[in-house]
View 1: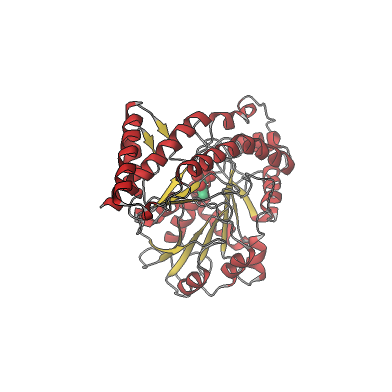
View 2: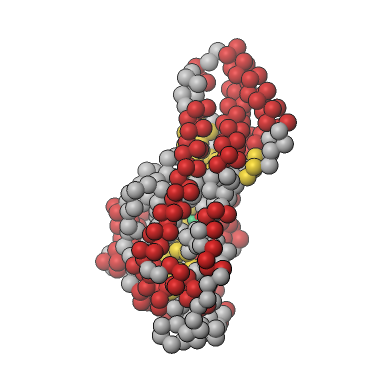
Amino acid sequence: MTTELSQMSHDELSALLDEQHSLHAELKAQGLALDITRGKPSPRQLDLSRELLSMRVPRHAADGQDVRNYGGAKGLPEIREIFAELLGVDVDHLLAADNSSLSIMHDLLTFAMLHRLPGAQAPWFGQNIKFIAPVPGYDRHFAICEHLGIEMIPVEMGEHGPDMDEVERLAADPSVKGMWVVPMYANPNGVIYDEETARRLVSMKAAPDFRIWWDNAYALHHLTDAEPAPLPILQMAQEAGNPDRIFMLASTSKITHAGDGVAFLASSTGNLDWYLKHASVRSIGPDKVNQLRHAHYLKDAGGVRELMRRHRALLAPKFQIVDSVLKRRLDGTGIARWTHPAGGYFVTLDVLDGTASRVVALAKEAGIALTPAGSSHPLHDDPHDRTIRLAPSFPTEGELQAAMDGVATCVLLAAAEKLLG
Ligand code: PLP
């Protein structure tokens, strides 16, 4: 399509509406059941690491501890060494835990609500604290704040991170205590935070108990030959004189198995001691059998990088399908823009203002499940009703092709309806 919808006459728009209505009716008649809601690895991706299910591992780790028993709160050195190298942190500043980094993020926030963080005058509970929430962002980050009654202040994302003038202005308020950051291949728009943004984040004036949840969930999840190293953010925070500012999180959820991987927390010694003090009340130690299994399976940092290239071979064609269908159906219409991420798990599709919810509803009628409109904003409130997150990893290529074609129909249909009033 080459004519922008906003330039079309009433008759042209009516014809377009009729055409998309019949395409939508055809879709409904097909009885589709397609799902591009969540960034789950596909069965083929999970099968890359199927060896994990049958591996035999020794009973003892390299340092002699019996992995079947309680204890070892910091995690096994062999798995921590591999990921310290990959994440650009000192092994002494990295803990290995159970399977979910999201649960560590939740714990950190809950602990900070109930117990005084290093630098804090009091626990956060009962204070009117706020978090900076770059938008669009990750719905589950926002859900943690919502669940704990923490106010979020949205800040628009730019090409290399959020609007930093605004972030600095907000962080200067002592009741602003935290910020969500996905620094590489951000969920959902694929943005990579650049070094200048990172330096400003670790240097800016903020409360002594202000922390950044630096969620490196996609640090190794490249979709192109460029494989940029993660920023050495702990070192940068140290150099800026704010060594406690960063909680870095990561996991093997999208490296090996999302349901039985290993999660990591990297931070200053003061923060880690504080975390372990409270985490040790909650658990007598992580699953070290799984950590040892992962260390033996992955072998070293090179082993992880190699495995990630095999994921890329399965994922990159799916991202190409999303792009080529959107291009074919929506290029030149002036009603849609989408991202071209170089890594991560998502594409952000911005549709005509005021139509995202309608697109999601139309897609649902046609048997295509999309992440609910508004999910990428705190409290599900996308003020422009514009942003839709697409997650191409799980469906097969054929299913994805069909789903994206259906989504494009819904985008055009919703826009034509809106423009015709
Ligand atoms: N962080 C981000 C940005 C994510 O997109 C996801 C999953 O989609 C997670 C964390 C979940 O991590 P984990 O599986 O380690 O709990």
